[in-house]
Length: 247
Image (tube, rainbow, N blue to C red):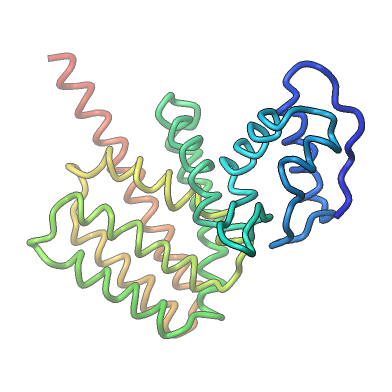
């Protein structure tokens, strides 16, 4: 392990120490699952107090970069990146940005059209039976009239999550978390009353069937039809809201 123990100045010392360790993790000087020195050792090497070290470690733990383990073989270890954990921060930020109007519907639809099209193409080539089965299960749930609006929206997210998994590309899956976990729920929340479920189900079926037969162009076409429909429903919803407000 190689850490730069020099250069810590007064100010937010805990933040500086956390940043130093974070840089060592990000550039590979600290390896995954490597044990960090003890609090006492870190305090001595950085020339700071143990409470300050403790605060720095809390910052790193909050970023899902380290974790503590108890027992004889315990200590503080560099974590293996967890896409689901990392997505929490990304999704929260994206949801906030959408909520305050930083992104409009055209930007969101364009982002989905371009990125999910890549997923369709890779899924058509790489999909396994487990992803096809997961998508099929969500279509079955969506087709059930007893499914609540909330359950339908959650199923919609899971359907597209399975499509992304079917791409079998880890970096792409991480990149798609914002789209799947933030953009889709926000759009669903707005169009839920206006959209026709059967239309969504039909387009999901077209996407699944195309991926199953490894027909990437057909899968992308179905995706584009789905996004065009959602854009239309989004605009119709906003128009209806404006009319109610005016009256």
